[in-house]
Length: 360
Ligand SMILES: [Mn+2]
Image 1 (tube, rainbow, N blue to C red):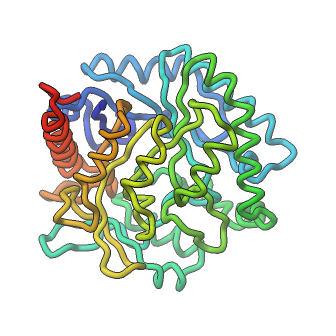
Image 2: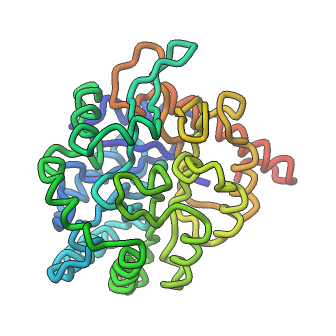
């Protein structure tokens, strides 16, 4: 297991590489070229500069989160091949730069959706939260306005103003796209990119939809065990894998997280491990990583990863805002550092209790 932290680059992140380097057990960062738009080819020069900056700080660039997929590919418009060609060129360059894990998602229009970015918990920390009632009461434009006004001045990934200006057009594009069509478009995309992934040994790790059900009537497919196994089978290549994100699959309480992990042996290329606290089945907030602070048994999640021999990159996910830190919601330093340390502790205990002399 390789413990990492997500880092948005020195231009955008409040957290420094020096700080990340000082979290025990964190050897690498997961980053992206945050200034690029979906569909754009990444410049080799920019990839190498990012890698060098991270390596100069004593860390490694363990993977990319994300290389975003252009809406033309998700919708399956006639010009999708042009954007897939661009994606392939970016993958080629990442492969040549020695990067072997790429996270992406196939969510229409929105990335993750939350209705509050700073819900106050009893201990005074603030967290991202979601209530279905609030989503049902909003239209997508209002949702964007409320998210952007609440983000501590940060531009949230997936909620970039340039994209959201076109939100009506985006919704129109997806009018004819149902779950089956989205599956077919995903298959087409994967079949075209697998040869370059085979050539450079790049593990593609699809991030689940968050929350794991349809919002605003948009199709959503990466939501449960049945669908994800269907996806693994439809392009049966080990480089076609998943980001197992406990906080995203976990939004649906019917998802049995350890069971899902065990069914994906060999196909989990990246893990996001965090906890949620449910106040009702449609009202949840992001809690501390600790099992007793939320709804999930984090020990069981880490044990399932151990059982399938998981040895890829993992990261704590959204943290609470604590100790008066001001940062991008979910992406402060302090609580994610606590999360990384806690997950490392669970992992060491699991490894040692299975007869290993040290954490694997
Ligand atoms: Mn995640």
